[in-house]
Length: 121
Image (cartoon, rainbow, N blue to C red; front, top):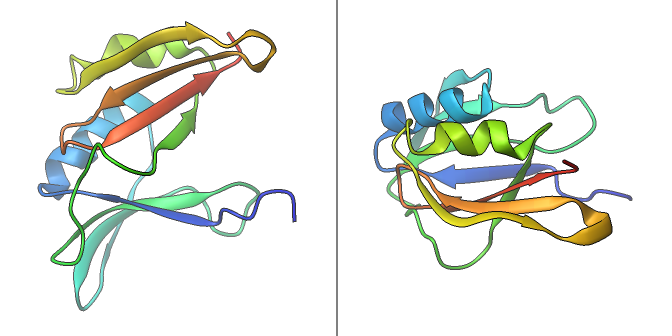
């Protein structure tokens, strides 16, 4: 299995605020889903290659900048980074050259989660 990661959940305290941020920065198409113990906006397509996931608000989750970091793939990192602060997020690590592996940056979203961004340019 080349990519065993199938689903991610990004914790939120304000689901609508998080939706606004992720739509503004990553231009995600989000589908609202309500479950017995949580509410979420799903992104990606579970039936396609790559990971999909959701923004989730639940009593069982808590946003954090400590621990696992999820990276979003970007066509041009500069484009998304230019939108982060306008959408209410903060820049943690600016665009950084990692040689043959492209570029990365890290941000803090509106919920307090550390999120990574990666691109080849």
